[in-house]
Length: 121
Image 1: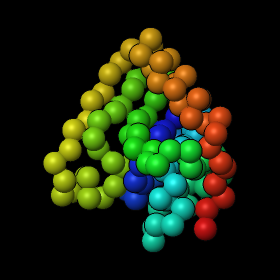
Image 2 (image 1 turned 180 degrees about the vertical axis):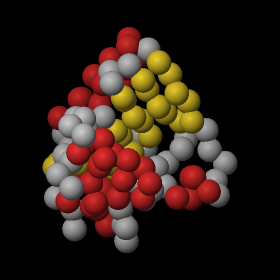
Image 3 (image 1 turned 120 degrees about the vertical axis):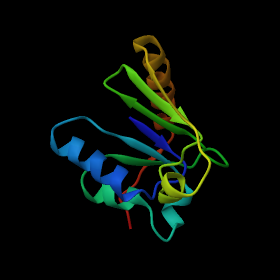
Image 4 (image 1 turned 60 degrees about the vertical axis):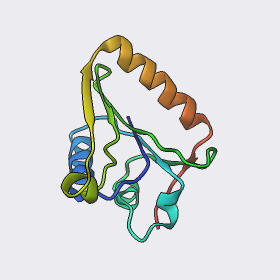
């Protein structure tokens, strides 16, 4: 499960699609700015059959979280963008905790309740 504010990283998007093709359940919630951005990897993931949602409830859905295998939580200031990978000063924290992953998964599911399925451009 993924929550992202800005999502333009081609390598991250490709890795997510590869995981999806291997049968790993993936869903994404993005900030509404991804709908109007010139490029969003959310278009790619939506067109590849990955359920991709837009959180239009908040002024900014500024989350940057990945929950992997219900045990690993990746979070920090790191947007899933080329700029974050190559130019910005960012932080990223990887935690292995089933208990913490469950807390983040519950939060993800709460956000999904009011997010809108995105079909891509």
